Image 1 (cartoon, rainbow, N blue to C red):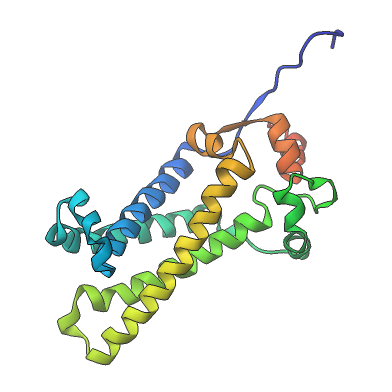
Image 2: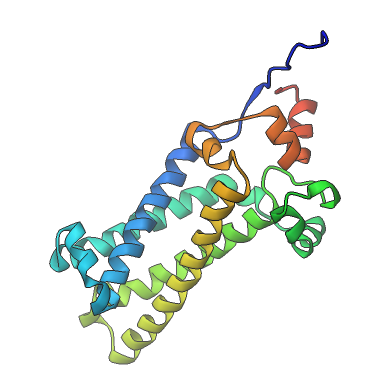
Length: 213
C-alpha cells in the first residue's frame, strides 16, 4: 500500500437476512410484551395500555405476542445454539469482562463469532422465554387451571420478566454505547474486517482460513 493512501476496510457478512429477521421479530415482540405487560401489571403504568389500543385490546394481544416471541426464540436457537456453547476460555472471558467494557481487550481470550457475554444473554433469554411461555399459558386460560397453579404462574412470570428485562437493558447498552458498530451489524448485516478482527478475532481468523474474506 502506498504511503499516505488510506486503507479501505472490507465489509464482512456478520448476520444473514434470515438471522436479522428472526432477531428483530424477537426484539419487537419482546418490546410489545414488556410495555403491555407492565401496563397490565401495575395500575400506575396502565396509562401505557392506551398507546396500544386500551386495556381490553392489550389483554387479547399480549399472549399472541408471547407466541410470536417464543417462535422467534426457537428459530434463533436453531440458528445459533451450536455457536452458544460455553467453553473454558469463555469462563475466563467472563472473569475479565471489565476489560471488555473498558475497551481493553488485549488480554482477553479471543472471541469467536459470539463472545461469552452474548452467549450468556442468549441462554438467559432462552430460559426466561421458556418460563414466560409455560407460566403464561395458565394466565391465558385461567379457567382451565387451579388457583394454586395460577398463583405460581404469576410469580414465575414476574421473575422471568425481570430477568429478561435486565438482560435486554444490558444487551441494548452493549450493542450501542459499549461496542459501537454492533447495532449497525444487526441492521445491515455487515461489519468491517477491522471491527471483526478487533472484537471477534477467532471468528475473523476462521473466515480468513476458509477464504471467505
